[in-house]
Length: 250
Length: 219
Image (cartoon, rainbow over all chains, first blue to last red; front, side):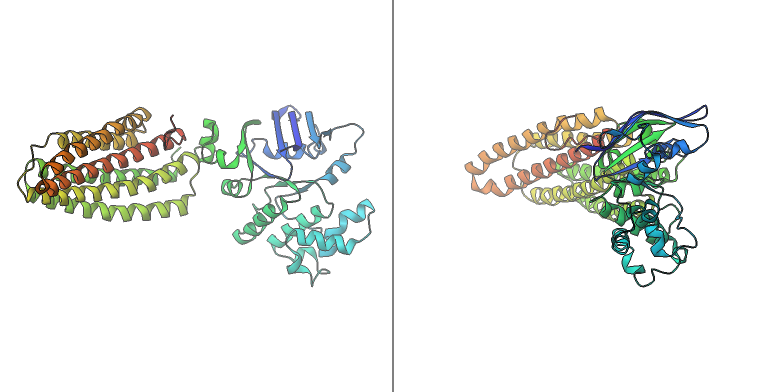
């Protein structure tokens, strides 16, 4: 399968701290890649390099290349904000904008970019895509923050989907959710794969095993192993991967 | 680091070994009863088989809980899968020991057909394979497990040889058919036990190396 996102010799730094060390990784289009590893292993930093979020941190910098559909996202001529429109992101804690209704939360990105056409339709599609439409269609004017945690997270996914990004990054999207909401978001991830490429940081190994096509294991800033999830979780090649996923450290 | 999962692994391994010990004893009693012409010893085989059956259910139940609670991965996952399969193999080996006892009892109920030469040799080989398979499981020893696989062909060959020999007895004298059949069945039971030992060895290789060597694939 042809890669849609490709990191080549990617290095990320926080001032002097070398957080991501020479990572090369190709993500096939319309697949789900899970990034796993102990806290501080660089997986979230790596994720944030993929849509130029890392450079927002003072004294942080990135070296190497990230290609989206073959073109560098670090091209000087590109506006980082435009990059983030193509590579959306969902965070650990649901963060609907306070003071905005459910509807406004979904279309806020469209409003900011000036594309105000067909907003009702786009909102409905995005909410359906996030498997939330049936639960909120009769209360679109209620505040986004009135929803349950799981619903809020799906609202945030809908907000990201409204921009129709080819790639969606998720940083521990279910770690603040209860098991039922987690299951719903996981189902959603699997169905989203048909139209979007997903790259997901997770601390939940079973979640990675359940939902991802491929898994990358990070340790101390390095990519230790990257393989089909069905192989990595049953017969990992690297002893460090084996030790981590069987809970011997981390 | 001690993991909570390790306690479960140790317990399952111990229980499976206890079961393996009973299987070895059941086979030993069945064979010795036949070779030493001591029919009362066949009763012990049934006693061991009952114990094996109890453990068979217990191990299955323990595995179910282990899977539900621990969600094992990688080597732990391969281990639990192997335990589930080895559990079935051991239970079947217990059944085969009972079959030897039943066929042996029939055989001893009539005048002997001939001095038993190949059956004891085959039994010895088979018992060695069972012991070696169980040792390879405990010690996670690839060399031992591979040796079990290498021995299986010899046991199969012995079974065929015993069959050919007894066929000549049966063709020569129809009155010898019943006794010949009893011995053929016993050799068949032993051959099945060796096959189960082979399965166990294959599972051990999978646990240790992650490689599937069944159906002719090699390490």
